Structure formats: C-alpha cells, structure tokens
Amino acid sequence: MTVRAGPAAAGLVGRSHELGALRSVWRETSTGQARVGLVRGAPGVEKTRLVTELAELAGRSGAVVATAQCFDTSGRLSLAPVADWLRDPNIRSATEHLATVWRDEVDRLVPAQDRTTLPGSTPHRTMVDAWQRHRFFEGLAKSLLAVSRPTLLVLDNLQ
Image (cartoon, rainbow, N blue to C red; front, side, top):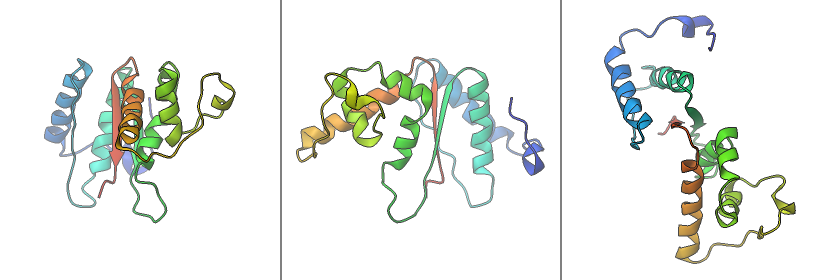
C-alpha cells in the first residue's frame, strides 16, 4: 500500500462520479475487454490524482500498471511513452517469451542489454518499406499484449 504525505494524503474530494466511471471502465477491462479511458480537463483540476487513484486500485487487484508521461521537449522521441511502458519489468518479462522476430522489433525501440549474445537475434535494420513499419508496430503491440494479467497503461500529460 502506498503511504501518501502532504496534500496527497487527503482523500479525493468531489470526484466520486469520475472515479466511478473510471472504475467501471477498469472492471470491463479486467474481464478481457480492451478499453480506453480519457480524463481531460483544465490544468490543475487533479486529473493526474484521479488516474493515480485508479492505478492504485488496479495495482492492488494484481494488475500490471505501466505509466508514462508526455513531455513537450525537443529531442524527445514521439514513441518515448511507449518505450517507457515497454521498460516496465512485467511487460519486459512477457516480451522475452515472444518469438525472436517480435523481440527484435521491440529491441528497435527498447534494446535489451543481453540480447546481442542470444542466438537468432538480428541486427537492427533501417525501416524503409511500409511492411517493415507495420511489423515494427505489430511487435510493439504483441509485447504490450503479452502480459498474462490485466494491464493498465497510463499516459499522463498528453497535450
């Protein structure tokens, strides 16, 4: 259980309807139905706090919770949040059980430290054709879907 300090220690006030809606979406997801929940609003209305409550609920129920933040900075890769999700130990572990072709695609974005010594692994090639990009994205999707438990992917600060 997470122990909160400061303002975060106070209970969530005035958000029971919104939290209930997110919990409903999560219940549907926990039964194997893929869902997307979007929390939007003006700055400072505690969107992150609301999503944190859901993430803690999901984590307590045994789900994998992978979080990522979007930052509007130059030099940050557009797929950096996906890379952050793929670095989650539970997702990384599930990725290791995929076929080599899919692990190689994931390694384009998040290279495995020990993959260079594994047999069957291929060096990264430049993606010039549409089919190569399609295979790359399919590998990322397979990795995120390989986790054998309900999974909550949180993307915060998407402006």
